[in-house]
Length: 174
Image 1 (tube, rainbow, N blue to C red):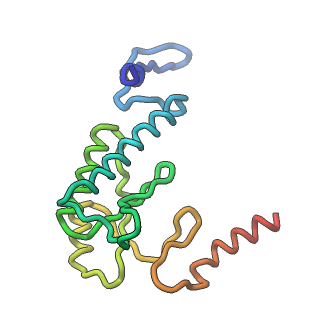
Image 2 (image 1 turned 180 degrees about the vertical axis):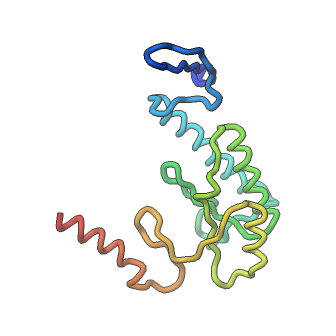
């Protein structure tokens, strides 16, 4: 039922008030369609479940966490997703297969120009080269800001939080 709703969109162009021929939508919903947020949530849930299935794969080793911690391989907020994975070739390829399947199924494309990967400074250069080659994603370095908060490893530095403090002060004073 949902597929019939989104796959049967036809458009017509008005030129000087005159309608000229119809053409079929090739990408599903129109922008601002009230149904769009609901569909996005459903599709994001499918991606989450597929990523979580990787934990059941004995041939997949995700991000190493302490034994008492839950296993994680991603964090999502709205349309942003942060993926965590070991740098080994087979594990990266498995995660990329999940993402490619997501693109194929949802017809939502991952924007590689807005995507980055981050590695610890002690990570061998060959791992960064391998990641770029397999994923097509560029590397950036720590620290970085995500949703207004600094993301870093190691000791806290005041400079990491300067922008956050400045934004809070600006809000309080206004």
